[in-house]
Image 1 (cartoon, rainbow, N blue to C red):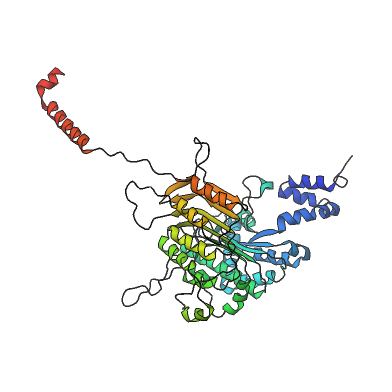
Image 2 (tube, rainbow, N blue to C red; image 1 turned 90 degrees about the vertical axis):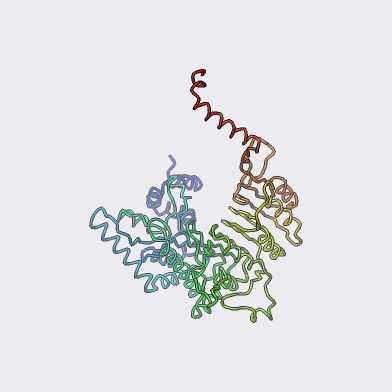
Length: 481
């Protein structure tokens, strides 16, 4: 009779795939041979990509993994979750739960105030020789299929905190944690990660900040003089930068004339991008309601970079010079309300190198009010202009969840009874045909027209109303009825 030790390795792996994590752990503990046989698949699933948080226990786990020669080589993607211990009053089930939570709160507070989090991150990053991606998130990925449909990949140690205290750690900018405090926390996480990578001489080609609730404020990207020489070389090697940004103007200083003393939205982000000249992939998701600020930043991004000789003279602290990003191949914009001419200027600027473009959850709006009855199609016009842009030779294009002047935009199908598609995507060399399809199929879902009553009908209605009023007062009319 076959046993776990005699069945083919492929079958053993299939068995392990269908086990919950706790049962998989028990299976690996049955004997050394089973543990050795499953090690490659186990380490790939649980240690290639792992999420931690800024607590002593979680960061110590990251350090311990980095000290394991085998696991350290497996770990290529490190995520730092923005889990925080709340400051609000909480009700605990017993004294032990209260003790553990308060101790965790004090631990995290001290970790951040003393800079120990940076030291621990640095120690771990020094040993992760195959680190490819470093990310920051304010959510848990829901792809942990082996533990059921509601399971997720949480930050290491977060489930332990919940089990011991009965309190689910919130992410910054979520739950009861104040928005302002949460924003400061996310800023701290970002600066700590960058500084630790630089100090560890670790140069992952990809940095991603995926936030679902509030983007990084512009002040996050400011590099003080003391740390700039350390961080700049690391930024120079970044190939992919994925960001959620909040370009709200938080400094309201003015000159004596009343004009703004700091008028350039995204000023620190503009300067930050000057330290990433080797970017091949840039993704920016915005706060959609900050229309003027987002457009000001994007207009700057679409401007040509100054010549090398004039760049130093034209650059100022408050008004950084535009960047060239000469190696940019992939450009993604999302959560944006913008004029079409701004997008066209950016595409034209980076056309010589661009190969991949994505527009997601974007609204195109007109610069002036549209005359009554006129129904333009800004997306069709933009697609037409882009298709005719010289040097723009894309091999991938994705557009989806679009709007025009806040009216939904879809893509017509051959079946007239079907609802318009919300997403269109193409990969290949025949981009010309896809451009034509986009222009022909994109349509604005205009609201139903308001029925206007003409003057004659209005007069008839008014006369009818008057007659009814007279009849109601006439006793003879009432008797005849």
